[in-house]
Image 1 (cartoon, rainbow, N blue to C red):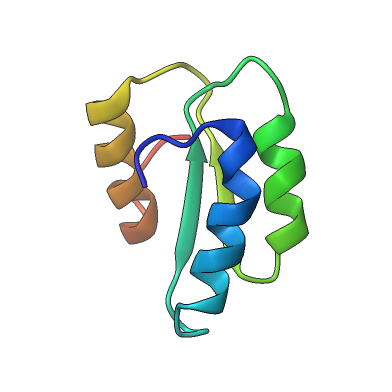
Image 2: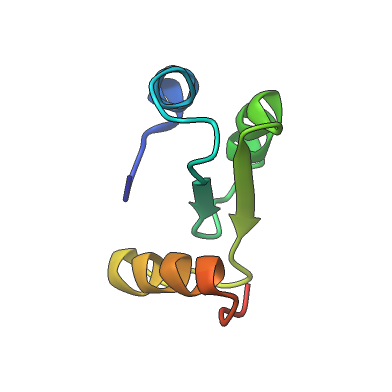
Length: 77
């Protein structure tokens, strides 16, 4: 998921958690949003979702690449 508007994030995570095997990693990377709304929503799914917030805004392509690197342990958040 590259970009999700805040109003749809809760429903999206709820659906993904219901329809995804429990051993499948679910990663949410906040590309330096101006509020903490993403973190507050993700905390409701903390048993299934890993949350990372970039220090600086990376943009869509670099944020996507950074997300992959996070899963293989080579990213700088």
